[in-house]
Amino acid sequence: MKLNILGCYSATPRTFTNPTSQVLEIRNHLFLIDCGEGTQVQLRKNRIKFSRIKHIFISHLHGDHYFGLVGLISTFRLLTREADLHIYGPKGLKEVITLQMKLSDSWTNYQLIFHELTSKASELIFEDDKVEVYTIPLQHRVYTNGFLFKEKEGERKLDMNAVLNEDIDQAYYRKLKQGFDVENNKGKLVKNDAVTLPPPKPKSYAFCSDTAYDEAKIPLIKDVDVLYHESTFLEKNANLCEKTKHSSAIQAATIAKKANAGKLILGHYSTRYDDISLFKTEAETVFNNVELADDGKIFEL
Amino acid sequence: MKLNILGCYSATPRTFTNPTSQVLEIRNHLFLIDCGEGTQVQLRKNRIKFSRIKHIFISHLHGDHYFGLVGLISTFRLLTREADLHIYGPKGLKEVITLQMKLSDSWTNYQLIFHELTSKASELIFEDDKVEVYTIPLQHRVYTNGFLFKEKEGERKLDMNAVLNEDIDQAYYRKLKQGFDVENNKGKLVKNDAVTLPPPKPKSYAFCSDTAYDEAKIPLIKDVDVLYHESTFLEKNANLCEKTKHSSAIQAATIAKKANAGKLILGHYSTRYDDISLFKTEAETVFNNVELADDGKIFEL
Image 1 (cartoon, helix red, strand yellow):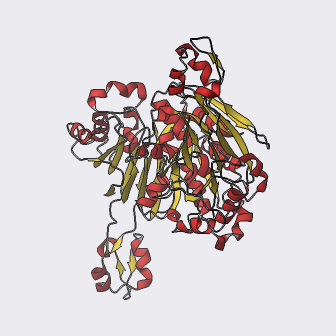
Image 2 (cartoon, rainbow over the protein chains, first blue to last red):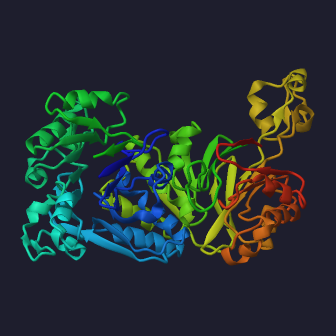
Image 3 (tube, chains in turn brown, cyan):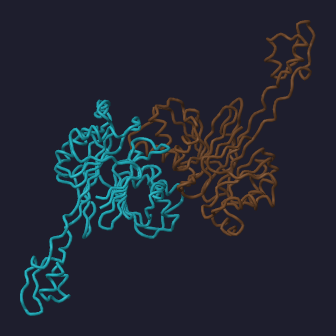
């Protein structure tokens, strides 16, 4: 699992910082999460192959989280993309993208499939044989979801020495990986756990931005391996959190602690601060494993 | 008159090139012309004061000419702008901007005044005591206008030696600048042109992008001082001009020549070309005074 931060600053794009966007690589998927203005240039700078992006998740319709989407869609068109593109985001997103395509008389030659979200409860919005994605309802000024990405439990691994010792025909390897007991070439029933090893523990990643401090989401992200949680403000401006429905570094850390997260990544810093290291310092007073997102940074998880 | 190119490449923003946007400084106005994605960052990089922009002109609703507008409007809001903002562009622009403000529940605290354009004939869309702006109907795949910016004739200049010699009271200086004859302190009628100099010749700038080769606009831009004309293609790809309704460098130069322009600035280069100097070379086979736009370049006109 790999997380590539394209932008992690709040509000406005600036010369050296970008609004929210990140790419999560998980089980061979490249999921784009949020798409602030300039995301397509950040994708280029980070050498991410456009064609590998098939699913885009938009948390909410504040500009710093989606103003780059229409441009990315239109660049995909110019690059003669053919693969379907799935977009998950709040109701209204389809209307605004479609209107802009209509006005420019520029329809995509690939399928654009909108999955508009309206539910205030968590729901499963994507699933294949390797990964599940759930919404995490967040508390913000407009309808907002975070997203929980969960690997499914993989197949068991063959313990090749044991498998060869037991003289099992290759035709049974697939069944072994699926957890079945099989017969060996001598007609003996071999117990599955004698010749296989358990699959690696499935990993999970929760993206929570933008949101006020809200313990309601804790059961959804309980024991998550990595939690990205917005921390717009430092303690000295914590009074702004309630009005703007954002979180402070300490509030983000409190959620990480109560959810028993493995690691906390902070982001969505207000552009009023010159030194983001203070976010880490403050969060570490509550939670141990804190890292700072920054534009272009890659986390191997 | 000063022209600051923020972006002058066609189609998609890339790591080192930007879609169309430029700032024309004319008689103390700062007019923003087109606003591709990333324009607000280009404004910052070029150290242009956001608050000085009060009028934005959008040629057409292809993304590379306006996808940066909604972000700029929303950044103005975050910077607590109070001054009115006038936006001139094709019908539909108001709907798409308003829809995005509605979806984000983020209304500007300043006045946003849309001047939606629908006419296929040239019209005067802005006028004050110093400047006039006319549309230049262009021929493109969607409804498109170029813009002609014309200084009005200024006041006559006082020839101070002559004025003092003639012993004219200061109270009459204003009338002199306006071209009137006045009486001096001895009761003698002084002819205006004996004590004043003609005003500097008013300058004009025409922005023509995007457009197919079209001589219909020539009367509108006749004798313009500076013509910015799109040149998407070099001769080797000139066959693409008709289908895409764009121009080649030679076509742009032909328009400049037939319109008797003072200077031609080329831009809107297709991103397929690594070396833009060939645009100049080709245009110069037709017209003498050719310059190449490039991102960040400033023309003192």
